[in-house]
Image 1 (cartoon, helix red, strand yellow):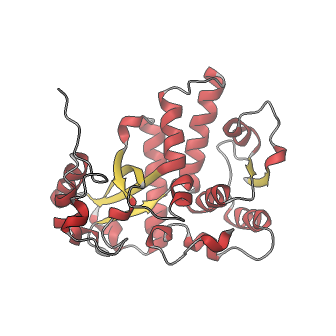
Image 2: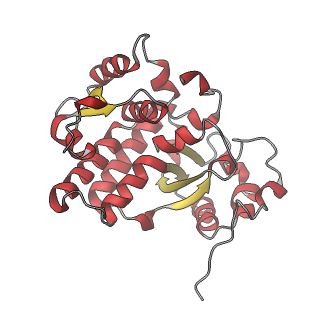
Image 3: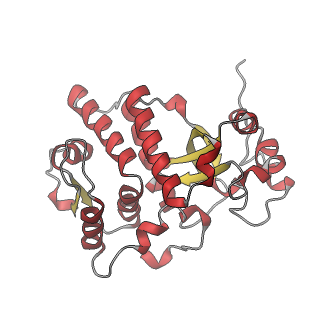
Length: 264
């Protein structure tokens, strides 16, 4: 099953270090060894432990169970494999998301409707990408183009901004998104959060940049909460350098790079 993952793909750069730290044997055991080494805890300070799915009581909500026990029910599939790697990569964001989800469940119960905050947390957890952008005029212009779906301007004309250290880089977060990209298709689209950063962040080593994002995003979530309005679409294979054949015509394919809908 895990042989399907092509670790040379750039969209797996985010979680590749966590994967490379795994020891042999059952992956849940390897996850737990890494979690202990990293000192992972939930928002109550309880140690994060990866447990078989059967440990989740039939009447318990998944997110509430993690928040109450620190135990992450885990199946032997790609979806949960990537989820475990994200816990080991962005532990503060995962902890903040779980705290929000658990609080929403406690307040409103588990019903057919999650409510806007829990909807946003679920989208973030499953399908988010984080766009780290230099907080300057060029960075804000890039984000404006993306928000307005000016795809050619953002991803073709401004593609040099996505070069290493140039001021824009994409970090995948959603584990369902990573699972989908095992079989890449041009239409796969991330719910993307913009993270503006001072220029010096882009000069930091990879691990320090990751830690900066983890701290900044988790703090922003605690301060500002979450809503679905905080996401914008970004086609994963459209990230400059992530797929062959990214000429101007590639970005003019309106079946994938759709114009923004305008209010009548």
